[in-house]
Image 1 (cartoon, each protein chain N blue to C red):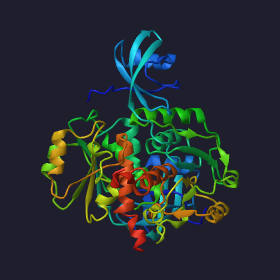
Image 2 (image 1 turned 90 degrees about the vertical axis):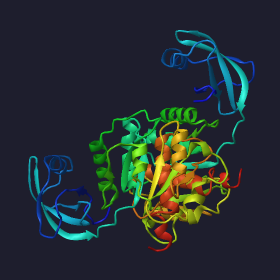
Image 3 (image 1 turned 90 degrees about the horizontal axis):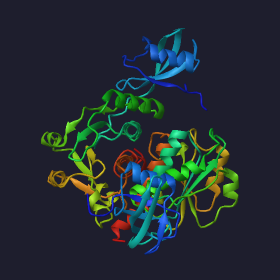
Image 4 (image 1 turned 120 degrees about the vertical axis):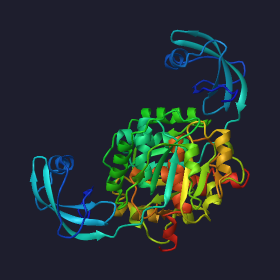
Length: 252
Length: 252
């Protein structure tokens, strides 16, 4: 427990010192009836653009809360330059995945329809809500850009050349030379991690990925992981070896 | 799709060529009524001790299936020498965690009651079932040793000296010198990853961990992750940097 406000909310409004803003009825209900906060209590606010701000509850009603914005508590972080391109999976697992992706610093969440994809409907609104909740809870000031599903080939047709493709290749499981730690440590700049559905990418998709400039196939160990496990594992290793966590070593 | 049997079952029975075994009513129901397998179809069996075996369905009834064990399809793997010592979390998240731990090669799952632990009841039977299902699905031949919850201090009182302690320390988030990749890469031998509850370890627990011979505090990046995310992330990075996935580079 510390003296910082314990509750952290995403709001769509612009944030600056002295601003007054009304919460949505859902957020007001949560603050007033669930958390039992009242006038004078403080919360932290962020909107994905203006950093994190302290705010005080100025007025409350049954489904109403007006906040008065105080001082900036944290500068806005840069948007993470990491995309997760993934074949949609079942509902409970995709919710979990969206949450974990947000926590682990994904900037763009891109559902991709591949040859072996079983699930083609994606509730982007729900995915977005999961990523916002994760940002609220883990102290991020950035939001995940949740995109609509796109067919595999169209995504690659329009691929920006400078974004590295790291693709988790089930057919390399356990093969020497494909360890992710070795293959991604030296990559710099924007990256995208591609994870296929259960069954992996089709041979044609694999060939297409391997033909993209600078694409790197990696193995996530000798055992084939479930798709959702593979995503979280690949994101964590990426951040540790090439991404955000690496800044720690450099004192950045 | 390949010619291997697609379904893989854990059975408690001893496995050897020519053995005949009866499935439990639940497994028989699943095979016969859900998967609609019938006499002559093949499955793979493992028991955590004798490797993986091909087996043919010899007889079926309504809640009854007799299997005839054929040839060994895979040698028994060594039991992973990695423990996850974790503060129990809420039901949905602990189920997920048990599954991910099994997939990511945890040998021992040890719930630990710490000062800030909110959830103290653990359904070990349920955790075990989740780890078995994960082993069935991801092709492991080993089973996770799911232990009963134990108080933090008792666990450390009886700690075997040769097992390294790697503990994820929220108070080091973003500090230079604590990057997990740097700190665990050279560790050899049995290891245990310790993850505290939301709020982390108490100051007294932190001091005790730091005082254990060869204990290493690590940071999982600049943002504090949810406890269940931290566990999966730490396991993945461990396997990539110091564990099973590393064997790939060496061609092991």
